[in-house]
Length: 322
Image (tube, rainbow, N blue to C red):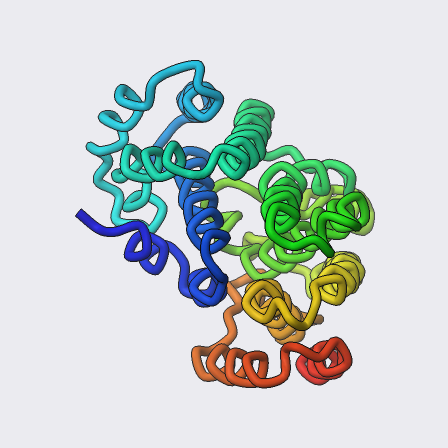
């Protein structure tokens, strides 16, 4: 049986780097929260599961998280999944992850349960609604459920341990939601092609000049370079605005909290670099954009040395964005 940390590293190449740098007990709390959300992600993203079944299982998982239903029946069903994906591996270990949730100190457990449950119910609502993104508000609504609420979850956990965050909780919650939307908007841009392959297109229809169907852009007959650039010209500034809020969020975390700052700085800088190589690059309509492992290592190295400085974070982000 894999340990929680082994599940974490199997499920995430980048977030595990930051989680491992956190002080205890925060590290364990966020590790559990992350793995619980990966169970939700598996239920939402499973390509072999019809939408009505996803809704039923997501709502059932939400009841488990709320303490309204035992975990055993769902965990037994998920233990039999045979998908060879990181999320499937976590799903097969749902009981183990849920046991870790139950073992958390009560204040942390309540925060994790509430936010993961709410995010899971949001995923269920979107699974029921289907891949219909008409407006930017629709996109923001979806991203709030899968990522904005995660910003709230993390902020509430930080506030348990960091007086400076607790003192500015309302502002931090607002910026934390923006942080989540920043990372998710970059994920939308870099994953345009992969999302289309699994049946979802996160380009709002209102972003397509002339009112065309964004799905057409992924077919050979519907390819249009000018339209692709126009869409990126809407998505990229949106990501940049959310990322600026993420930078302000990081600046609110005291330099003395090195592990917490690094946990926030690393995904922020990875997103800045990913956006830089995606900007005005229509190849994102053909393949997923990724930063290299060398780039990841370089960012981690510099952040560990100079991440205590807000001025350096701002300067390095500008450099990465070129």
